[in-house]
Image (cartoon, rainbow, N blue to C red; front, side):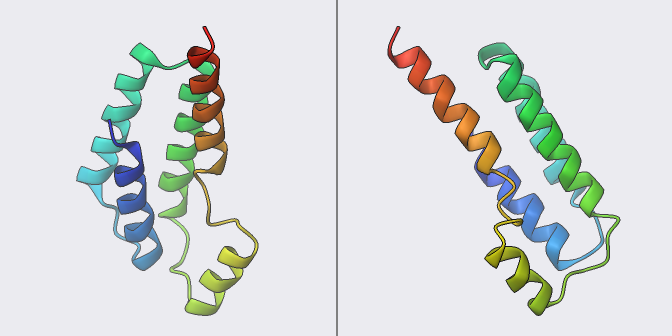
Length: 97
């Protein structure tokens, strides 16, 4: 399951315009639902919060290049950091069992 591709598509769309990528969001939420089968509650919770952040960002004004540069420099554009860290920790736990 490739959550990264869905997230990257949703992020690119939301930063470039205010019109939501409905098919992309549906795909993202479908992947989160599939995660419920295999992933821990912690990983699913982080994925849900992160998807909600994507949805909330659609209601914000478009970002200028200067604003995007500031977001990149402050790492605030890296919404997947918490999710990827939780996934890595879960993977390491399963690997050592």
